Image (cartoon, rainbow, N blue to C red; front, side, top):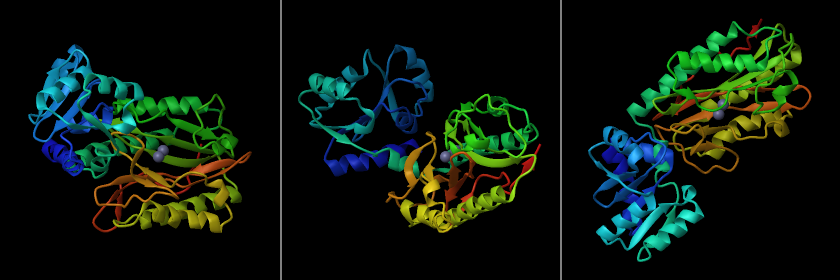
Length: 358
Ligand code: ZN
Ligand code: ZN
């Protein structure tokens, strides 16, 4: 597994005519070396790979890294990279430019002045886009944890309960069920606050006639899930039902469009056209979805009006259209889907019928 991952970076190295690539970005480092610590760098040469860590992490790195990656304890990461460059007589080296600060780039130039440093992007992220069986198993468990938390929270939704308490219960329940943590701070937005796509849970108490949007996810074995459901409290009126059905129709069209070979832009359009045709295009101001894995928002694939990322089997992404009306509220429905050889499979199991609860 790690050999395949390391080799995917070596293909880029060969293409660039370089001898070495390094990254200290947490998710890239973990994907390439198995190391879950919070500091260190993975360095990939044409034949060998190293994980550079300081004294605090030597034992953990030794236990987590596969045989293909040699653990080296260093005093400081950039000094360690410079030493490797000297030992290997590296002439051209590549750094992960989206994750390297300008200061560290300068530092490396001073420590290894003989090396021509080339900033590169997405050498690891593209590989992370297509999940293998072990990754899918972890991700599916993270999805299950979110699904059971949704089932659990339904019974707690009633007039009078503060948003903050629902958010806390979702988090607590997922962690009790085995989640390492939440994939991102839980979103609960009720009534008019539903117009805030990323509304932080407040002290607002739910009232009969509200719609409440809950967006949350779990982390399991490092992998994130992400689900959104909007439910009605007590009762719902015709407009709420009509808009809910509009968002659901768009969401189903988006899922239907997730097929290998399509671009993120094409899938986004399939859902967006439905919302636009109903006159609510301006009220759906974000992209249709995002890739997910070790990070909750990944580029491969992003579904948006500008995304040219091509869908491939093994990719996992969210499909999450929404409509937000200031002063009225909002509706969003989000599932995770796995791109398959033909079409896709919906991983999220929670019901999408409009639930009227409490
Ligand atoms: Zn979400
Ligand atoms: Zn999402």
